[in-house]
Image (tube, rainbow over all chains, first blue to last red; front, top):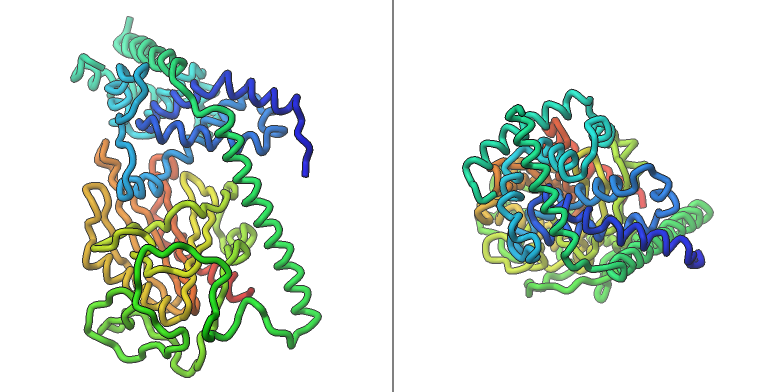
Length: 164
Length: 315
């Protein structure tokens, strides 16, 4: 069995401390359910810990976390089961510091997933278009189109609900 | 400033507010991450051990071609699967050596009652010429391997860990109160899955004491899906195909999961095939928003089920 490596563990702990809330916020904005987002992000970090020697060499380990967490959380299979077996609904149980943002996140959920993802990565993750294109594996023009359509849709939704 | 810029600035500002709010929220912490990682390590070690045992077992069979495969044993009193799961139902006990029904019935199937069906599309009964059921015991080695799926033409992105804490894809329908009751109280279960483009491919294997009971469980799933297609506001189920081309018999289910947010509906395909006393369920769950064309998902589900059936038969 591999021996514990204090330096490796400290490195991962620092990465977790520095990024986990940001990752959870981004996944929350994309999936619209805080508990699902937190569960998926924690699971993604657990997977990263198991292969930290590799993940830590990536240019953007946070992007890896976000991508894995998102894939976990968008699983409709899990969502469908949650709908049947019970669990917190979207917007329920959101921590107090985020209560003011429920309407914004709800508005985001009304967008097609691809547009929502582009908006969140660009405006919440502060990623440039080229980097989003690289992460999603699509041309930059596609990202620009998704951002444009997403902004137009959000403008309409924001106008509909001033509380957003 | 253009409208697009103004909306962009507003979005940026509000999402930054969300980010600042997230900085003040409590987090499960590193202890939770370590717990999850330890659980994953245990599952991986178990899977590795099973694979080693499988290789040694295969070598033994090569050296002793007349030896008995310990994974395929005749049914008999007291014979049980390798692991058990808690059953949420009380099913009518059925003799593990009881011959399967060969007479189509018009009665409604409940619990572990004999298989039903009056049409030629109904699941065929087990071959009456076989006096005893072949019993498969489940372990992680019962799950299809990545190479086998790739050889079957399925493109995988990565392997997931086993999901023994989860439930099979089909939820309780009609009057069932738990997945165990809906699946007629299997004696054993093993599951795992793979990441595929835009979603996941999940395998759930359920074992029963006999082929007869596995057949009855599959018939109950089929009949309940037909009797109670609307599961709740967001979820509906449909039986789209029944036949005998995969394993001894198979049923294809389609679950329509509505997002509840934008009205979009995602179709989840579940092919459940029976091999003797085992039900092999292959679920394809992909988000069209990420997977693009999902029109081939039903066939993908069937192919995946066939691959796991082949894997079981080759054991």
